Length: 482
Ligand code: FCB
Image (cartoon, rainbow, N blue to C red):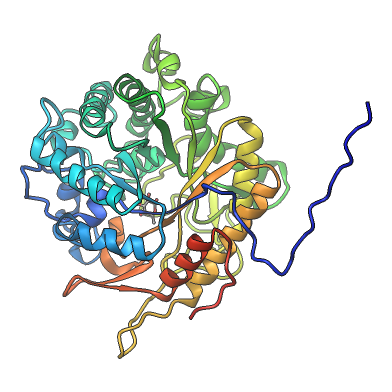
């Protein structure tokens, strides 16, 4: 039988690069960063309430008390999303709104806020994408040991079940955790995030219990949701590049990859913790005791998509030339147990207001490498974006050509990665709105929409209009600001 002739598609270079039908065009936020209303509706305190009120922890003493007042202004914000042509909105659910102490029955008032939000989204034709945990652990659970305690993972499973039962009829795409690396290693290692502990062994235990919490969460979601519901987790897999090709620098990159990436992808996707990670950290943790029978199966429960958050690559070396940043990054304590003698360098070229190097090739490599390592697992970019020093003009416009260039460059990389085989199902811009940027407070603006914090007035930036054009046409528009 003769083979069909291979037809080469005509490369229409005059048309903007198109994305497949059904590609998600989203924006993301997180509860503590946008909601405010921290004392309303019976909400209990979270570790971020405590941490942000601790002098010296957050720039300017900023807290999430008011944030962008999304709790009260969500209707206006959903209307903005509609103007932006978004197909999807990724938000997180505040655990202490649902269970003020992290235990016991759900508070209906807390769930009602998310019922109202999701109803509003659905009425606007926008897909709600709910993340169960974006760093706001109920303070009482921290007082009982926090993520280094195994019981916190069990509590998370119970919480997941309560939320799934309440919102399962209207949310079809669920995320368990956002960036568990940050929760474990910035929260308990370097201490620059809540709860601000600096104990490398506790950070490693936290990582395992976050993995276990994910597993318990997946089980709870599967038990309560229709079989069509999709489940994901958002990982900030570090795109690590050795400074040179020397054996020592490649070994430095391996160590960071172990405790930065494979500590999550190993048990989640490949059957268990890698041997080299166990060896690097054996002086800190007894892995045989930490990981109990049944944990591997729970953590490795299949997921439907893998969420990836990407901002910038990491350049690492084994020795410390003059330009290297302190190995520990922020603060005096390392967030890299077992890799404390690795040095981080500023990659060459332009950087955002965070000082993060702008390098879309990191996203291309991340997508193609992750796709190759996990055949058959669709990917979702659950965060990507940039902070710049946005200032409104006297007539009240915000021109942000650098953000448009950043988004264009990264979306072009996504398109290229897809052409090269990565199965990417959507892109969520970080963030819908300027918001509380954790230890940086309100000084760093990531939004497509500018927020005047004095009035809570929202001003869509030029990048919002650009993104809307791309989302509406499902094709990457040229990076011109109108
Ligand atoms: C990610 C967080 C998100 C936001 C961006 C800038 O690590 O998930 O909440 O702070 O960084």
